[in-house]
Length: 89
Image 1 (cartoon, rainbow, N blue to C red):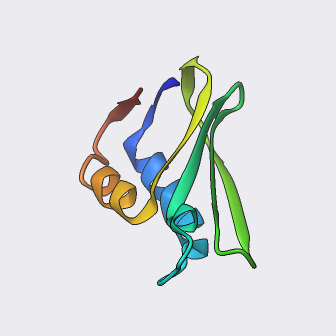
Image 2: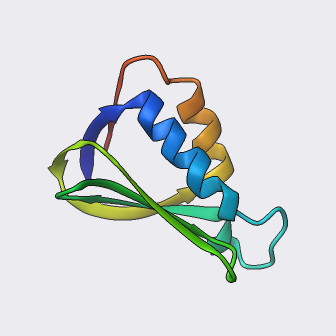
Image 3: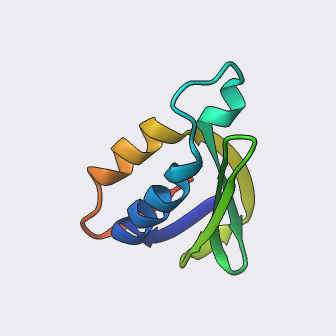
């Protein structure tokens, strides 16, 4: 997976799906955000088992793929990179 997108847009997308991240959980996968690089851009998904939020961020996708990253940590890291474009691989 490899894509380039606006750091500001990625931060906003993570903020949107972050509303579904649970404060505490016994299931660690629920603490993550699923990141999918697809033709339309980058699809972000988060869930707390009851609520699932999905949003798409415009991006130039160089290589399609998917993965899960810790939601709160990813949000903090991207928040510090909001100026300019971000390349994720």
